[in-house]
Length: 344
Image (cartoon, rainbow, N blue to C red; front, top):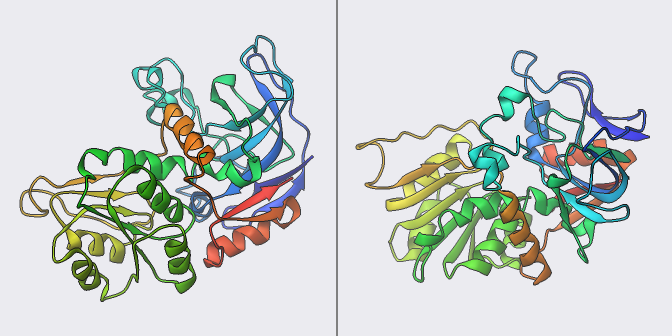
């Protein structure tokens, strides 16, 4: 079968032929219908040999959907032919966090060597993939897998980040989204769907600012030296209630801090290397800094329900599997509008 693999440190992803995998006891094989390409993949492929810990070769794709194709011994939770999405941040299933469906915060995953598909385990960017437990499969039902596969990360991650700030996002508040790309444009829609806040989007590219306006941002400004002043003008001088930074490089970190205030949430979602001082004299009183990771299984059900209600839609560009390296090149260059979806 064809698969998209990262095979050499510092190299580009390659389309290769590998064996079709067989499911072991408790495992499920999917015939993949769609897989998403993500900035996290680019981050991983940009690590040095000393930093890289994911194993080689690595079949990419931590956003996956497919049709149940073959069942390992003992599997009863899904049936052949089911259309499903893969819950990516897989845990042990037995610790306190996993018992709440928060496998993204599993207490034993590292100890047990459990890795998400595409981020240590073989991923979805192949014609077939193995899922280690039917617990990690959510029914798609009538949702189109190609249009919705990215919700497993690009929807779940911002939803989890925003949901934790919901008590503060009451009428009259303002939320700032920095980066209107793959995750950011979904975050804007989620904010509009589940909060009454005014949403301000920031990005460097006019095309992404246009996308931000299309999906519901009340204001969309260039993320430049004048951005903080334009935000203050839009808020009447009041500090913003929450900043969701999907870039997290030093300029965006500094920008977010400059518009935050007392009791503000500063939520660092991106994988940039920016740093943020905290402490009594380093931040406004009672403000918070959070770095959430992915989301829970229950939250993914909620994201799918938002999609079914027509409240959230991922802007996608579709590529056949042979063109996956080009999709990653465009992702790296920042020329994608929304999310790249690979279809085997």
